[in-house]
Amino acid sequence: MKPNKKLPTDLALHLPDTAFTKGGIAFNPHDDVWDWVDGPFRLYLDFRKFDGPFASLRVPLKHVLLVFAKGSSTGHLRNLFWAFSHFLTLRGQAIPLTSVTALDVSNYAARLKDHDKPRLGWLNILLQKWVALGISGVEAECAEDLRERRKPGRTKGRPVLTRDPVCGPFSEAEYTALYRAVDTAYGTGEISQWVVVLTRLLFACGGRISQYASIKVGDLTVRDGTFILRLPQVKTGEAHSRVSLKEFDLSPQTGRLVQDYIDDLRKQKHDDTAAMFPESVVMVYGPTENRRAEDDRFAGHCTSPALSQVFSRVLNAIAPTTARLGFAPVPVAPRRFRYTFGVRLAEEGASQALIADQLGHVDLQNVWVYVQASPKIVENIDKAMGTQLAPLARAFRGQLVEDEEHSTHKGVPGSRIIDFRVSKAPVGSCAGKGGGCAFNKPVACYTCFKFEPWLDAPHEKVLQRLLAEREKSANDERLAAVNDGAIEAVKEVISECAQVWEQRAQEAVS
Image (cartoon, rainbow, N blue to C red; front, side, top):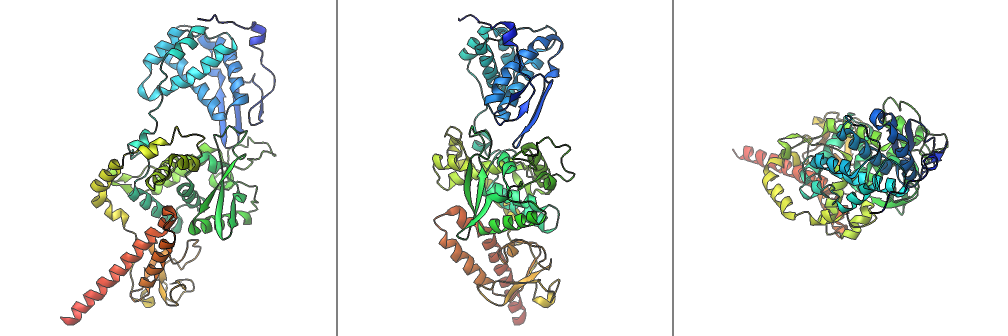
């Protein structure tokens, strides 16, 4: 065992008056609280908790964390701080601690509950660096002990592998029901435009919430008639998330929806360099304080926790029910959209390399779960829940009417719904007069609760067009499936019409 070579105290514990993070944020290491906003991330480290029996460790800890602040991400720095805080909390304050020993670490590891065991991995990173720097506060045998100890971590991909109904990917029925619930809530004015836009983008790209917190108005472009979203990449080791951007093709419906939303932002004086999901729009009362410099490239952006919390709160309030949880509402969190995106890619036959690329992973170590997830689990769930989920899967939610005379707003401009690609004859009416609707007509109408299809209308021609468009995209299952909900809804409308005609025919005979 190598001796712990400590630096002279005055050198080892010297802290500069000013230091800079990897992202270029200036701060004073002497402050009791390290508090800054770096890109979409917020950091708050309160060193005042290290007092009393742990007071002697405060400055050495700052010195070690300063190294990580200069070369690592904000999230990495936060995790290291929390791991050491948890270590001291679990140890208790009965006995003063001036230097961490191997026995202290062993006792800590023994007390950890299963869900806390990943903390030992973070503690290992911190203490290894602490010993390597030769700073007082950690005995050398700690590093040796941790190297020999098998470092536990989370069971990689457990929510995906088990299709966890609370934090794993959405089932197909939940995916469809949530998609429609958001559209319905937007149509009734229950949720804001930014919420439906972020929902669509989460479904379309599977990004981390920090990526959407980093996105700007100018990141949507139209090239050769195709809507293209440039999504900032995080966890790349770069100075900030906008150094690298990945392009995603959006469906025409989603692209037009995002474009309409951006047009509204521009009317509010948000230019191409402004946040796509700005604090002033997402946070009803605005941010409590502005911690960014005027020239910060992320000025006006939400932090990722703020965007996640507001989005989750809004969607959980309108979430549909699921049989997997005894018909309780589907728990909604941004990470579940990401899991769903990865699972759908795997089920479509995508390779691990492609899944890693689409999800923004720098290697393949975290994507195997999407490929390895047992198809038998999905098969059993679908088989067991299929009948129970049938009511949730109903695509047509409107009300069949005889004709325009029987519609809610007969003759009102904008209320007629026409698909000029198949016929000049209307297919129905809109109970909302069509006002303020950004969805693709008449495709989105068939799945809208405000739609009033007419009994004698060319619904079959609409169905033929949608099926033909689907056939054109047969080589890209994700793109081909964009209108599957509408296709099912049109079929249901046609079926209801047929039932009415059949009933009338029977009545005429009798």
